[in-house]
Length: 367
Image 1 (cartoon, rainbow, N blue to C red):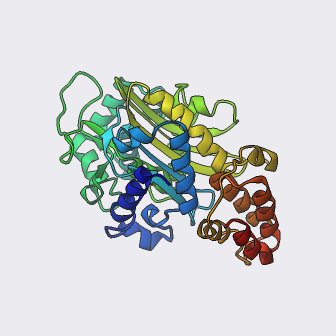
Image 2 (image 1 turned 90 degrees about the vertical axis):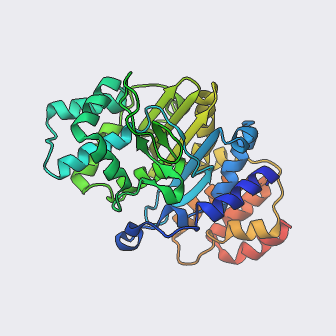
């Protein structure tokens, strides 16, 4: 791990994954707080992907923020992030906050999800219509939306975590009516708060099941082919997303589903090449989280040697006796793709998935 990423990781651990109390919902829903679900192997994989793409300086300069959450097992999410609580201008991505506000009003019986409302919401999300977003913002109410985002129920904008999702301006020429109090942004987001939005949607913490299903349907079938969608174009994935672009600011966020696996990915960039960064970044992240077959995972492995400590950490989730064989094999593939084991280490790791007695040998070989 480079010095840059080590420093960022330490800061993240102190500030993002434990410096504050968990949101109130975590204790009552049975689902963990994402900030308590940091995964070392996934973090290392994300950092290596960023390094290989030449994005180390962008991360250090805080021109790039990323969060990734493996939600294939909703009760045991795995989280990785860089600059997860750094708030950036996010252009149209915060339209998901307006979507939430509309569904809260629908839940309260103050708005009907009729054909016209559904069409307005769909246009706002899928093709990012500014006219539709402004119209819906006015229907929800500007102060009402702010109250929803900062409420104890959602806490999607929380000063304790450096802010989060914020809408303080209509999408158009009108001036901002209330910029966020921490960073003076009109439309802002943090990568971890956006990830929380999607995790809460998937776990029924945003809305009851039927309304959550309809929210997710509106997020599906993206109408703009760029960023994460472009990067995943040949994978056959189902993508539920909202992106944003304005001048040098590029943002994207998505739930990606394929082959029985699911993950959340969020990227916020401040650079004229930010859109391309996100298109390229999603590819190795996807390969880590949805390994399609043993050969594909094996072909990507390098010669990086692991310390005994790293090997033990990598093997520990694989070798739990209580896990069924299929789950052990899946975890072994994920571990191999994330930590770039050599071919011999890969074979041994797969053996460990079948026979936990092999684990000590693996640690010795990786010294």
